[in-house]
Amino acid sequence: MEPIIIEGTPKTPTVKFDAIEGVFEIKGRSIPENSVEFYKPLVDWLDTYKETPLIKTVVNIRLEYFNTSSSKCILDVFKKLEAIHKAKNEVEVNWYYEEDDEDMLEAGEDYESIIRVPFKMIEIVE
Figure 1 (cartoon, one colour):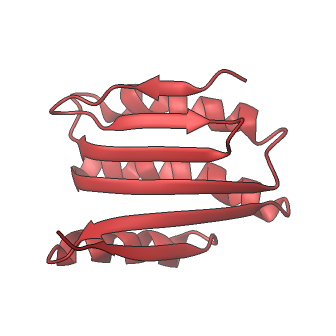
Figure 2 (cartoon, one colour; figure 1 turned 30 degrees about the vertical axis):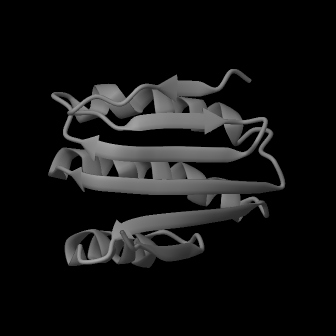
C-alpha cells in the first residue's frame, strides 16, 4: 500500500500515513478551503488499510489549530481508526497540545469521549 504524504501549507496540515510502519501523522494547521475534499483521500486510504492493518497502529495528531469543518473530517478519520480498533487491532492516538492551549486539550478530550480508541494527551513544553 502506497503511503500518503502531503506537505503542509499555511492552510493545510502535513500528513504522513505509512501502512508499512503503521504510523500516521497529521500536524500543523487545518483550515483548508474545502475540508471534505482535503480529508476524503485520507478516509478512503484508511478504508483500504483497515482490510489488512498492522497489529499496532500509532496515530500522532499535532495540530496547532483547526476549523469547524476540519473537526468533522478529523472525526471521520477517527471513526475509521475506531473500526480498525474494534476488529481487535491495537490503535493508539497521541494527541499533542501546546502547554497553555486549553482549547486543543479539550478538543482531544472531546474526541476521546466520542471514539472508542485509547488516547494519550501529550503536553508540548517549549
